[in-house]
Image (cartoon, rainbow, N blue to C red; front, side, top):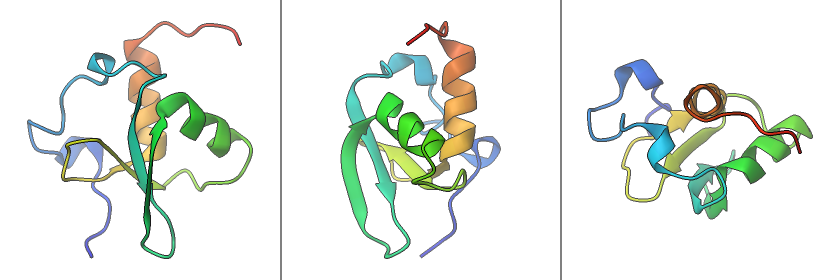
Length: 88
């Protein structure tokens, strides 16, 4: 099993604009420390779980249909810069 890739090393297909996926759509999967793939979940849910301390910031995540994993904290940074942030 290979390590999660960073956004800068993703293929053109995987590196599509994150804004094409609404933050509340169930299209995100994550791989836990037992190498189990769980999901789909909305990106907002993964962000909330990260904020609550359930995940490490380097959790490997991928969108439905993508083959490469990305680092959760990088995905969230990119998604927040692509979409306006709304108060909860």
